[in-house]
View (spheres, helix red, strand yellow):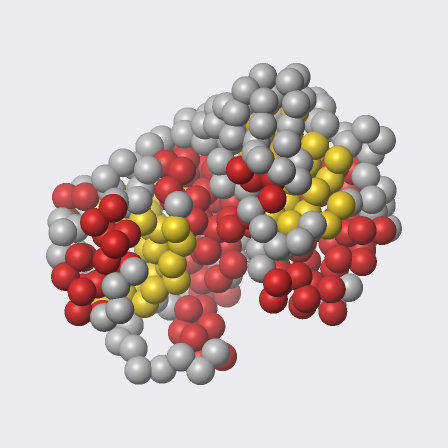
Length: 324
């Protein structure tokens, strides 16, 4: 799976994009925007699904002109939790473009949008796109990115389906072993599930913000006896900045093993291969059978906060119970 951060000059989207289709994947490797635009002409309205994100009465309030600041998600809910909820609620999205928008989008920071976009491949979505907003334009401005045209959905855009996600109703989620599609539930409903290994990292959740979240949960605490906590920064730049800010110190002091920047335990070849009968809780991209080692192991998936909290308790745990 290749992940590209690309600004798209397209009628209905500007976004972070995850691509499965070989034709479109090849287009993303091309040098010119003209070739990229040509590839996007293959996407028809009947393959687009609009995901409207709001909080409580937020959608109606937004239409009435409410302050967007009132429409924020709970701090405990991350991009991983949002994705796992969507995957459980709606299942696979093969041959579809998932377009995210709505008043609640403003409360989802860029690192969570990256996670959602990256994870879209796990429900077989061709694309996961986000409509442009102040969060995105501010992000680009801070990095000196100029000369682009932000393209919002047309007022009369048609979609195969419109789905609604109420952030106010969400809580930390976990996917059970095998697949993320229609196989998740709130952590609070799982019961006491022990773990042998906890992994924070990969292209989905090895970002600097993810390491900050893990450090906040782990600071001053200790990994449970018999549990391996592995943390893999997504890049050398992330590793160095996390070290400078003290995140890695807090994580290491708790008893975690911090690896060099790599795919790490995610792809099941080194740095955390799980054995027969073992249970791993991962924040990486995939949890299908055999992904991280033995086909006799179980792989649950959750957010970095949930993984860090679970490493402390020794069983899958809502992070709010250890950070209060």
